[in-house]
Length: 406
Image (cartoon, helix red, strand yellow):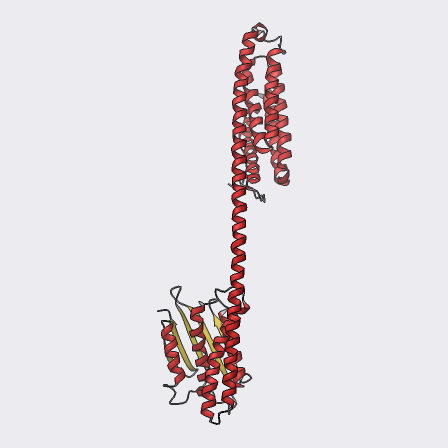
């Protein structure tokens, strides 16, 4: 199959079809000529040279087609011109006109093949040349070796020419019909392509406008959330109670996690999803910076997949926010020197909507934090994502194992 389908790089499928047509024709010719050449060595030595030349010609054509496939029109035109001239010479030198059917077949092969590969002009030209050659043969050429044509009456000659002309006319009409249908089909396909292209450009333009509008919406939402964060910070600065300031800061962090989602969407060209790993790393960095502990805590984020749906990103980000806030408040004792680490690992589940979240810190949680407001929020957000979780405490630290989408 590799021999019949060489590696070619024609952009137009019609050019590819024409090249494959002549390529396979040459391969088929080599497959037929080779056994004839070998057999005539032993059977008919007088025709051995004829088949050998044909075989060598076919091999050279295959070679040039392989080396210069873009020149296939010129190569095939030269080849079929040679075949046509040989067929004409064969017709005029053969004494018995009944055997000229071989020449006629080869001349028709040239007509059809040149029409398909080189174009309608060359096909029509060789059709006219064929008709001319047979007219000359019957009316002006009367070989002495065969007196049959000399003895033919004018009526018989005209009848023979009429029969040949009828056959050639049918072939010519077939080529004309094929050309007309093919031209019409190409015009219809081109018009459909241009119409589809215009429609795609219109849809793309509309889509780009919608993306810009959505980006602007997310940008405004992000700005409004930043205003809320600023107002909460101003308000918290007026409190004297440390507990009130901490509560306000927790609220600020929650708003910050939501604001970051809109910021990431605004920065992306696509409105469908955002990079999950990038979002979590940015969220952890911002929250640690706000808490003032960014230099004391090292964190790692690993994810098996690129993103999740935007409608799931908000509760998911709030869960991570609460987990980090609880680690900073209840697990890490920053008054002591230590290697404080947080590891977030996200993996795909058994179905397209299933995924897991493993959150690990190496701190030691304080007593009395099981009923904190942050954990209650985690319960709520986990339920929104159709999930469940459990907390595991071991020598490595405290680990939260979430399963979402169940």
